[in-house]
Amino acid sequence: MNQSTVSHRIRLLAGEQDVQRCVDIMVTSDPWLTLGRTREAALVLLRDSTREISVAVDPNSDALMGFVIVLMRGAFVGYIQTVAVAAEYRGRGIGSMLIAHAESRIFSDSPNVFLCVSSFNHSARALYERLGYEEVGELRDYVVRGYSEFLLRKTRGPLNEYRG
Ligand SMILES: CC(C)(COP(=O)(O)OP(=O)(O)OC[C@H]1O[C@@H](n2cnc3c(N)ncnc32)[C@H](O)[C@@H]1OP(=O)(O)O)[C@@H](O)C(=O)NCCC(=O)NCCS
Image (tube, rainbow, N blue to C red; front, side, top):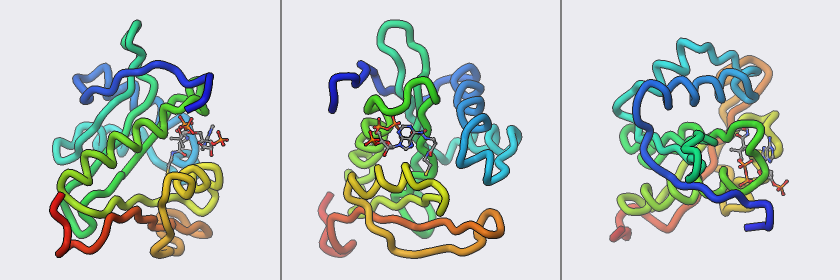
């Protein structure tokens, strides 16, 4: 944590105002611009009750600074589907805090945290590697032709040895 780290509080996404703010953060930023994520698709994701969505807020103003979406169902249990910080708050530790929050939720049930990063998103990938993630696969032309999604994993060991 560096000197410019901002104070924040993490709470669950609550209500339509949060949803709209998260959608705004997504649809105005890469990687989602390059991936062609529409406002409608982002709204469906943010309103999906099977997702566990946490937001980082300014403890004084309650301004929503970023969010993380965790999926605890499906083939890869413990999937961080999205992490995003509003452009004006980036580089101050909020993304790392949101990822740490998601990891502690996931590790309470499962030894693996999965996430995908686009092949053009070098700075996010550098952050994930610094946080202990390793590439476990490449999905070529997965969302848009010409780019890959890299599947990354951070693990605490085999499923059948894990006690949570
Ligand atoms: C990636 C992201 C969530 C990280 O959140 P953050 O609050 O900026 O991250 P932190 O302050 O905890 O860590 C900073 C690190 O994040 C990385 N980073 C990635 N994208 C960044 C950006 N647009 N601005 C600043 N740092 C960024 C850098 O490696 C940086 O490391 P550095 O300080 O050594 O340069 C955030 O920058 C973001 O929302 N980016 C756009 C959306 C995105 O790429 N999401 C990930 C999809 S897989």
